[in-house]
Length: 373
Image (cartoon, rainbow, N blue to C red; front, side):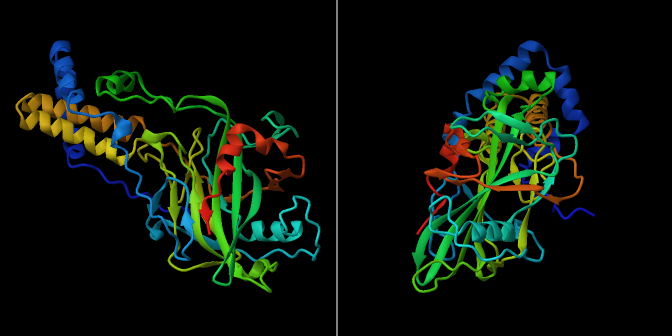
């Protein structure tokens, strides 16, 4: 049985009628002229999608640290962890990235919270390693599973006697295959005034998750015993920065997560967005845009701009776009830890041949940090 919980999808009331065979028949039977008038009635009542997006950020964690990224705050019930014994690493004060944290401590800490990844079966893309230069260039190709993970451990500061660190987990793919939609959806999207610009294919795909961890400071310094740390907040990137589709989220656990417990993450097929649940068939458009579209259809009907048959046809069109076409794809094949885990160091001092973290696409994700003391 999969450890990934199923998503909770909120659907407007109109989707029930829109999914009925009679609604599809109503759409199929509309003349071209009447169909065009119906869609125009919706577009005239629907604002620009970007203007509709309202990121539901909760500005602070339970520890009082400030969340920096523009991302939704999700219920902690959507977070699942799996316990695994901590690995043993001999003490060593070597600090190659000059962040005043020993490298072996960083390794043990990153391993103590490394995600348990569910990569979709059938993903056409693979993880990669990159050349030691300030731009992304593939050095070698791996597989889609197990993942290749690159991590960074960054000091955030000491607050109320606790030292806080951010652990970034980069999952960088050779490619994003983009979202493939049917011919019908290629017609319905512009007819409803919508676009999937930003979901196209491209080389490289820089995805990530991150965790805020903290432990009692020792002598005014960060503790270097990984087992003393707990996780207080998590960040998952999903279509990060692409506003109509951005489902990136902060998630706080019900109680702090002890070292050795690992967040369970699902990576969607081809798009590689990060979720705390099985994302199959999850809408990619944000809920504000979905709700506004159904409201526009309801308003057109209430104001007499469309009749009942046309209303049913429009509900079918919107339901098809949001819940059948522009959705995540995921086939569960079970979970696995990253097979390769490499410390990339800091932007000011990359290590282990990871100068590529200063590529503008990666640097933008690592600057600023996701939490601030």
